[in-house]
Length: 211
Image (cartoon, rainbow, N blue to C red; front, side, top):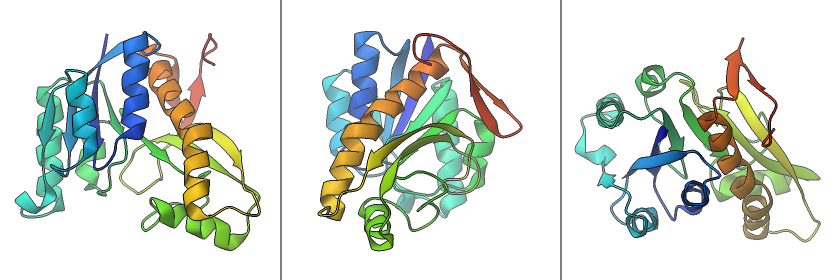
């Protein structure tokens, strides 16, 4: 059974959907550790309610970003995780973290990569930029994490309509409900079933019920 670790910084709505997927049997795995960059993150309560081990590892407690990233590597290695999900984690880590877990770290981004992604594009900023550009279709992307922000191989994408009267907050909610909360658990489930392969920086998904 797949051992899953999670990194969080805030409310943890995407984490909750993955927890629900595990609890229902949709995801054939176990969440063995949830690590937060903030002791105030509500995601920690979500984990605790489901008897999942939690830790708080803060960037400010380390000399620099690399030392912080190395501490996270050590933690997850000790937990023997096979997959790490970034479920609303707001810190860009040193490349040493991705190098320690090649194609074993997933992130959810609230846009259709390569649009509106990279450093500075997070949270409401993504949706503000999308609306400012006047795009008609947005969405969400689950991708593997490499040493650059929002740059790793794309696993799943799902489109969401942009409406004329959208505000960033309204669009953010629709993208979460219609895309993020659907494709993130799906990607984890596919990984747990061994149906994801990366060839030449492209993801291939083998056929099955969740394809």
